[in-house]
Amino acid sequence: MRTIRRTLVASALALPLTLGAAGIASADTYGSTEVQAGPDGAATHSTSATAGENGDSQYRQHSGWAGQDGAGSSETHSSTDGGHDQGVLSGTLGAIGL
Image (cartoon, rainbow, N blue to C red):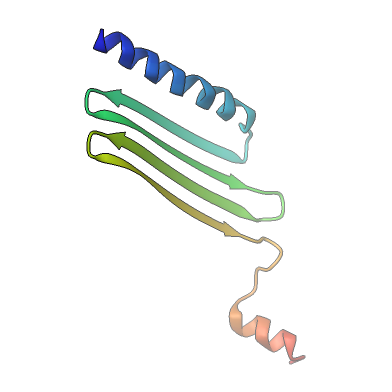
């Protein structure tokens, strides 16, 4: 009975993630998702990286878990704007007209 319940939980979590990942697939996008369920709890981990046409990029990572001792979540985000590809010094000098 526990095995059947775990299989149902894992399937229920995996289906929406699979359908969502299919919608973001392109040559400039990478995505990875992992879902686990067991007798001690459930966990999910997803990662995505995207590069845009203007040189901008994004990186995201998410982890979530729940078990007998509680639940938790962790997220990491990073992005760059391709329109500003100058350093701090050259940007400051350009702003003051030098």
